[in-house]
Amino acid sequence: MPDFASKLVRWQRAHGRHDLPWQGSREPYRIWLSEVMLQQTQVEAVIPYYARFVARFPDVASLARGSEDEVLRLWSGLGYYARARNLLAAARRVANELGGRIPADAESLAALPGIGRSTAAAIAAFAFGERAAILDGNVKRVLARCFGVEGYPGERAVEQRLWRLAESLLPASSIEAYTQAMMDLGATLCTRVNPRCDACPIARRCVARREGRAAELPAARPKKPKPERRATWLVLVHGERVLLERRPPVGVWGGLWSFPELEGTRLRRFCTQELGCEIARTRRLEPVEHGFTHFRLRAQPLLCAVRGVAAAAPGREWLALARAPDAPVPAPVRKLLGKLRASSATTAH
Image 1 (cartoon, rainbow, N blue to C red):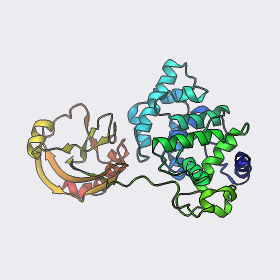
Image 2: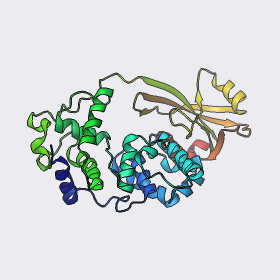
Image 3: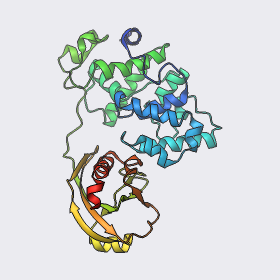
């Protein structure tokens, strides 16, 4: 399709998105931040997080000096928290090993934590005008439909074919407009359901439209039942304070603060031996369910009023209920903390 790129560039300039907060600048840090936030997250959800983040960390140097707790607090609710930890690690590497200069080519960018091949190409294209191909989820869908690529894009052979296709379509110029066009087309017209083929600039050449297969392409992930993980959250309250503990640095909600979890240990023994306190009374709260990519979590919160509290061990902290929801905690924990704060007067009595 020799005119594929030119059609997209013309369409993007006339109908694409031009007013996103990170557009209109070649500042590599802000482009990098936006591309990381946009990984597996929709633009509408990212915009307020992006604004708060750059207000606190306006450049890579300020981010490199930041604490993980503060970065995670600003990220809290956006999900996929490894992105935030990798962003901080990469900023520190730029500051400490690269003289504070963000690499100007996709290959070097991809060597930083949390920047994969497609994200590196997007940063390099927008910030430095490098001719590099992107292949995020939206682009995979556009290419699979337009060129009739069979198979699930997550399979290695299918993904490699899509990469070859993406690279073969790159224009000799206008790489920024073309890259944005690929993103915009997938996000606004060639959507997963109800695509707007009538407005698409390449609809006449699209295999999926011609064969009536837009609902079939790209092929869906092979279905597997999601396993369920169960946990008991200990919601330990002492007066107007609640106990939170930091989760391990890797894994689910890595580095965030959450409730201690009870695993095969008697509750009273756990509180006495691990926390140095005694339970006055307990009450089961409504279970919390939360979906992850590969499993569902069903947590049973157990509200425990305690007395005789000792100083918290490292990695645990008694926080005032009034400010606990503002700590770097995952969204389900924040929601529960908000309910506790609202009813703290009743709970205390």
